[in-house]
Length: 380
Image 1 (cartoon, rainbow, N blue to C red):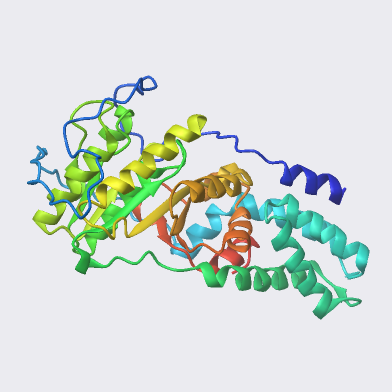
Image 2 (image 1 turned 90 degrees about the horizontal axis):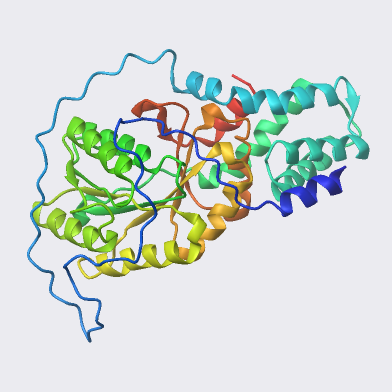
């Protein structure tokens, strides 16, 4: 049985199953796939021996912001919402543990069954083996109950997660700190930008939002509405399908001139044409470095927890494209595959900055290893 599970996870291929956006904004349907790229007027990409002077900032028209409507108060604290959001993942894991361990001696057969259970719960092969080895060292041959196993599992998982539980640092001295947000379609990139933007505005930071997924009219409209609500600066494309790199260049030049603290840049995520997406992302990075050679200062990869082990493959693909600096894991409340966060931590050791368990801005919160581990096992 273990061999079958191992072969199934090793052979996992990305199979995007996008869900509807977390914060739907009515708008026109998604535009058809682009034809050959038509570069918009802007900086030429001819190599130069030294840094090129930035052109005068391109003025961008934005509508006057509207007031942000107060969200109804959330029930319970953050840990209660996290635990509730992880309930499907918890049920999947703890039901198997309870079945396996009802006052049972922890022998080799029990350890093998525990490893199979952890792999089936999307914790990944490497993390599952590491956890089982911990049990073998400390509890082998002893009688254990399901409560003891769950508590020990939470401790072992928290140990794996602790090194990656790091907040997303914003250096306002950069003016602006550029966050390039990447990921496949449907993971919640645009919604994550909206939530982060609101949180930064609530902290008193000045924020710019760049609608870099220029072919998706719905994404542009959604970001514009949230920019209006939060009072953030909005940088739209000049037309549907406009060159994303040129837009990012102009937006960063304007943001520097205005002294914005943070610039959040949305991007396309069409993995069906990996080579084109890879080149587009590299082009965005190359062009914005003509304005600030240190940008982007953060590259945030947004992952949908409902995709389970496919998230592992997505990290591999995007690490090939750009220098991913951290992760955001969304839609944990709609997934029975929250264990994949453990697999990601074990395999890549990338910082997990934030996790999302709901649609409100406050449902996207900094990642806490112990809270997540105990929530995943249904412990208080």
